[in-house]
Image (cartoon, rainbow, N blue to C red; front, side, top):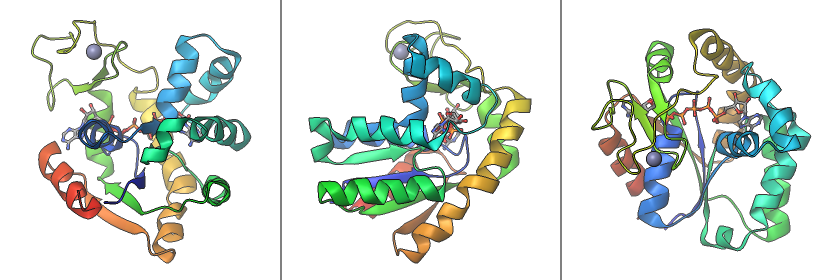
Length: 216
Ligand code: AP5
Ligand code: ZN
């Protein structure tokens, strides 16, 4: 089974939703740089303060900061089981850094899953997203509503909206995606690692397609 993977794709394509489902099903760590920055911010660390000035604007946190954070995470024991990288790498320079890190560890990537979705769908998905500040579960006000409005099904916490999920910031994040992240598609295609997945469907068939790609 393939266990070392990257999820790429525009904001709101459903990378995080799929990564969380698969991480639980397959017991492989989900490594989301966005979640890591939000955790730092919640804990009021210097890294969190620095990252927030970028995430709130929808621009990328500097590579040196992001790369170091990922390196630290890769030193943890659980990554030996494999990893689902979500939102990293986000430009070709981060991809080069990851290649070096993996070769230091004696590992290689198994697959890069490109979750696609048209821009109109993305704006609706992101502005309707609500997340649980306690367990990280992802909901959508109409597509994946919780059982009780505004409350997490798993732990009863009050759901929140991410500060960068306003329409204006989403437009900025999309343009950053097209300019800085999209070149990764060609990068990983030429490495023979890229598989496209149509993210504009229900969660379940997308998960099933990914499981098949992984040979799980
Ligand atoms: P990050 O947290 O990575 O955000 P993103 O890439 O913009 O991705 P999203 O989390 O918005 O979308 P997603 O694809 O995970 O969608 P989700 O599954 O939640 O990054 C945030 C910021 O951190 C960046 O802007 C940047 O500043 C910084 N950052 C992060 N990584 C960085 C890096 N490597 N370098 C530099 N800076 C970095 O789904 C979205 C919504 O749609 C949800 O409501 C969900 O319920 C719904 N939905 C999902 N799938 C479906 C479906 N199949 N059908 C219907 N609804 C669905
Ligand atoms: Zn919760």
